[in-house]
Length: 116
Image 1 (cartoon, one colour):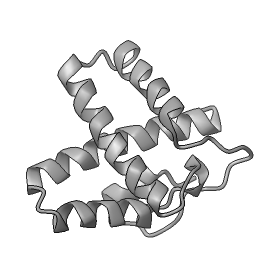
Image 2 (tube, rainbow, N blue to C red):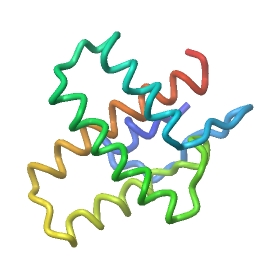
Image 3 (tube, rainbow, N blue to C red):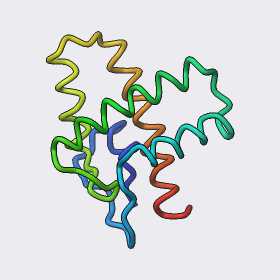
Image 4 (cartoon, rainbow, N blue to C red):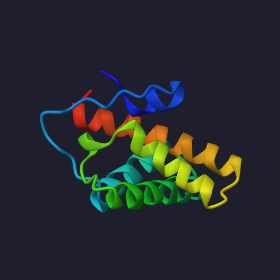
């Protein structure tokens, strides 16, 4: 199975696998991810705030593209989001940090969706 996190890191255009059930890309998923960052990753409050701000930015972008469930999320949606950040003048270092944040989120989300 291809994870978006892997696809982003290697530049693969494949799609994320379809799953037997759908997980909405909404504030409920973001709150579950926040709990994960606190309990399992043991990140500082500043890191958690940055990860969640990056996730919120991604969710706003992909929701505007009509993506409402994790299983619909494709590498091209993330590329579109990153390109939009670049056009808006985000620094390269900020975009790199956001890639790391989204990679961690998609890896976690894939584990939640697939149960692995």
